Length: 490
Image (cartoon, rainbow, N blue to C red):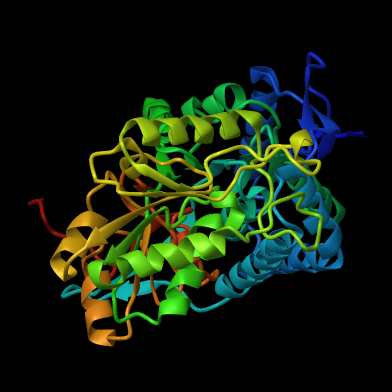
């Protein structure tokens, strides 16, 4: 079992009271590490270090090219350790090794993207009727608290760390208590490349303790949080104490709309991928499948047939297609929703149980689960289950598809499958969601903005918007005719 530490002000440290948290492998419940549990004092030390580093300008006053060189060094080191990091991610989170490989690759791309972006021309000049030059510049927010969930431990972290550092901020980063291992390895790289002390700090522990403190601290200028909508509300409320900027990427209940003119096998394939990738523990998961009535029965039959053959098991097994649920608590929550769905009158067409055969009883494994005969006022249709559970609804026409798609409090993602390009575009433009696809699902890249409508969040990550999210906008006015203004008489 590994023993790890936190990274504060350029040093690896224990918690001040020596309290710790045990980290387990959800595929077999084996203990893989013991990590410190940060106290409020520990978290304050990290905040103070980040504040001092920012005020001294050891990072913010570097040129964009100098900051870019550091980001590229991080990307290079991640590349060197790619396979090792992917294996660690699969072991800590429960996802498959193939999924973890993609996460590490995307993390590398993200650092390289922002290294390139900050060295590109930027800024704006505004014309004036006076002899005046008005210049608009982007400056760092200051000290930023970054809080990420357990479903994409490394990638979600990098999606915040890379643009926050690129913009010139100093950071205090808190990974989920369940899945801190790849974050620790990332900070080892940050230490190895010689990032100035205090610029990047890592605190480990509970969200209700160190995470809450980051949100409410008067010394934090911005907090960026990814997680559930419920916790997002708490973060937003805590952040109001000093009117700090808040960026939130929250829950989803995303519609996947299948028209009867879609390429049938492609639509079925992506419907499976949309929900069962990551064992459904994905904020953008296509958890509500809407199928046009002409192919509804045929689609359900094929969906069930394909889902029956999904290979579930330990993520490091190269033959496995869907890994473990990340914690016993999350598995219990998913199973509770299965019971809710049955009580609501939905038809459990497939799955619905924990898998305990062939050695899977040692871990947290769940059957791919499909509900049919559902309607929009059911909790399983409205609430984020965050597991391998889908509901399938029937619709008649475009108008009904759009109405059903938008009939939730969420607006994170959505997709349309149709071979009629005009229709697909009409419908996707009416879907109230920030991340959408036509004839595909789950594709993303560092250059495209990421975030949602409605109760799925505030702000955007990735892309140029993701950089600007971590920046303040300043107007600088330069007088080109230096003489008295003459407003008052002598």
